[in-house]
Length: 255
Image (tube, rainbow, N blue to C red):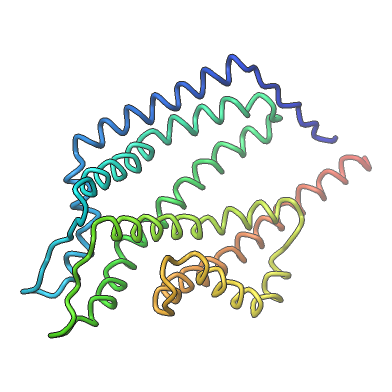
């Protein structure tokens, strides 16, 4: 039996209503986050402050009158969007779910949940494991003639891009799962192309890292290599399960 995908019907009124809900959710999240803006930014700054040499200037600077306010606003926007994301994903799911068959609806929600968890795991990995090592490396160049005086704008830009990049690369197992389900790759193919994958991983790390140095690229390439190996096993079990389902389908048809 073939699975028929229902056409996606978009009611403009319903779409407008969902967009308004999402925008209001983000606005409410930003307002809540702004009430804790100093605490949020203090948490974000903690790895950098810990890496600054003791006895030096252990604070971040702002060089324009509006820079501190804009930084707090950006932090609140990021945190507020994160707070609103569960509702945004739910609204997106209710928009797409009616066009999916029953099997796709059963599989779709867990995939959405796991993709969110993988993204959060990537950001937490960067914050707790990568940030301390990276900032310790960057501040190690301070001397009697060089002193780190970090701008809050530059630090926010650097850390936000770093967290985003690690969140994206931790989606690799989900991406491999989809490619395997589509029949485009399998575990055997991934093992055979491992050497090319390693080269591609370092290229991707060089593109996604916010700095051009080899140290941060290596910090990103390491988890990517591990995720690639995990993805091979995901492809192995996904292909195996898919093969069993097809075999069962052929047996029923022949009967």
